[in-house]
Length: 384
Image (cartoon, rainbow, N blue to C red):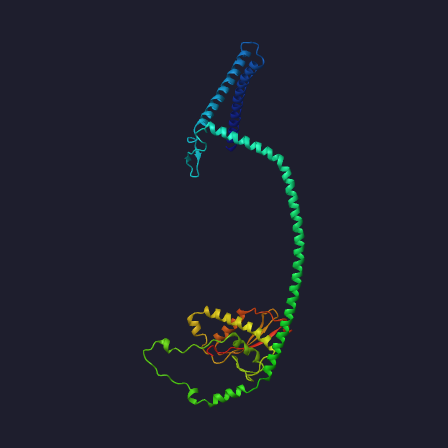
């Protein structure tokens, strides 16, 4: 069965292919005949009637040229008409996209008298220019000579002024050197005299003060209890403000804390009349800068605290905290130790934070002859 079907299908295909081929041959033969006829007409024309005459060709070309000329003339006329319009009717573009009309050229002709006057002025100007051309070279030569003379005089004056100026500078330098030497000698003499006076001062000041304090009656030393007045404003009851300690008072104690000498803002024992040496003054000036930076940073940090943080900052405070700071040559902190706590963790953290934020401090001076600066610090209670 399958073989019969396949054979039938093959026969059907062959028949269809043959039919298509026959149709193609018919179409091709018909088309070839038409093309052959047309080619014979073009290449093998024997009758002169089919060819166009030369006169007809010339006439057709002339007509085309006339039409082109007419079109050009019409376009030129249109352009002339557009140009002849007044400026008010000419369209102009504006920034807003709409056409605006305005006059760019005057719509009137100037009178003849004005034209005559303009011509006369031009003629006069031309005559003057010719005369000036003749006179100009003489004037230029004169000006050049005058300028050269002035330049020579200026050069002479400048050399004189420069020499005088140099002499004045030398004299001023000499005088300034002499004055500086005199002032230095005077300052040295004053310092020597002050040191001698301080050394020769008697140690009776402390004794007199102690005697005066002992002779005072007990009533003056004891605190007097003032009577309480009910209904008085809180401003009246508040105690008088205590005087603020200066930076000098704040930093003096840093120096003598190791020696246990004197008695200042930081507690130390020793003679109150003893004055610091020149080296001690250098040390004080450097510690003063450190204290100033610490004091400034502590105020900044306190200003950023809330009210509750400030009130509970010193909860558990019982002692004055002691710290040890070691600075590098460039002023950065090498070591920061809390030796004795205050009893309040918040207050200790606050002090350490102040020192860290205040760094870097000024670099260690060269006259210290050391790459490190060891500084023991004791922070007093703020109420003192």
